[in-house]
Structures are given as structure tokens and as C-alpha cells.
Image: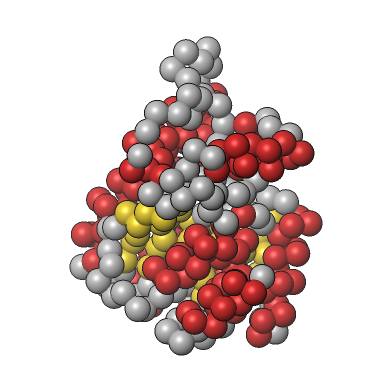
Length: 267
């Protein structure tokens, strides 16, 4: 906690989101939840999207404590028809604009080319790729007005083979490619799009792989022994990086894959 406060204080010298409106998907846990807290700390007006009511409301309360600014919360599944439209339209209705879109919602799941059904492919692609693309499409008209930006949350380990992660890796590679291909188009209108690609992070993403929560610590501890830095990333570190990337500090950072993984993807 002390380390997180120190990081916030240091970033606060350079990062300011006062009067800026930020949408964070996947805000009820993990990286998205901590990103919401950081944005709130730096003065942002927030629209938070999540699927777990208890956790989403807890994040919203944390955000409100920073500057007494109550976030707009959306408890919904973004893969359902009309959900993305609801988030964008309600955010604009409440705040009148959008400055930043963080596409943080995602899910993992065991998949293989030997799967008997296409449903697993569709489910993983829907939340990890289709939703960020559609949210960006819908947000762009408003981001053009504010000269805002988009941050996609991808994954650094997509170039390495991991049994069972076939479709997840495909989706995250495509998400990074989306940012690279869209950047030149958006740049002409003063809008940026980047990917923050973390390595293995201590989140609840294992739930999508039917792993019991009680086993998370054991699995992460086991993974740490194989990492160059000997430590799994904490969501707060990735969240801080997202806040920096989405800020005005780097106006020419565009179409970039920004890796944060302790060199895990290099060995």
C-alpha cells in the first residue's frame, strides 16, 4: 500500500485528469479496477463497466473517496446486443463528452485447434476483440471532439506457445494489430490509440479457465519461479502504466505496443 501511495504521489506531479471523462471496461476487478482507482486519484470523471455488482460497487466507492466524484456504473455484459451503445450514450448523456476509453474487459478460456465446437472461439473473441473494436467505433466521434485517446489492454506473452491459450493469444495479437492499423487513421484527427501489454498479472482471469479461487495463490507462486524477475505483476503497476499512456505526457505515442512484463516475453 505504501508503494502504491508513493507511485501515485510521484505520478501526480505529471498526470492530471481534472475535467476529463474516462471509460474503463473490466473495472470490477484486476487491472481495470486499479486503473479506475488511479484515474479517480488524478481527478477523472469515470464511467465504470463490469459484470460483478459487489466488486464494481466497491471500486466505485474507492474512486468516490478520492475527490468525492461518484462514477457512473454499468453492470452489464458488453457482448450482449446494445450494451456497448448503452455505455457510450449514457456516458455522454451524463458528462457531455469522452476523453479516454480503456478497453480492459477480457476473459481467458482453454482452447485448442482440436476443439469440437466453435463456441469457445466465438466467446473468447467476442469479449477480447469484438467488444474493444465496437467500443472504439462508438467512442471515436466523441474522442475526435476532445482529441482523446484509446488504450487497449493486451498480453505480452502472445509470441510464446502456451498450451490451451490458442484463441486467447489470437485475440490479443489481433487487438495489438488493431491499434497499429487504426493509429494512422486516427492520428490525422488528433486521436491516439495504443496497447498496454502486460505479462502474467495477479488477477482473477483464471476464473475463465474453471480454476478454483483457492488455487490462485499456489498457481501464481508456481509461475513466479519461472519468471526472470521472479515475480508476477501486480494489477496496480499495470494500471499506473495505463494512466501514464492515456495522459497528455506523450502526445506522439501512437500505435504502440507497450510491454510491461519483467522481460518474461524475452526468455
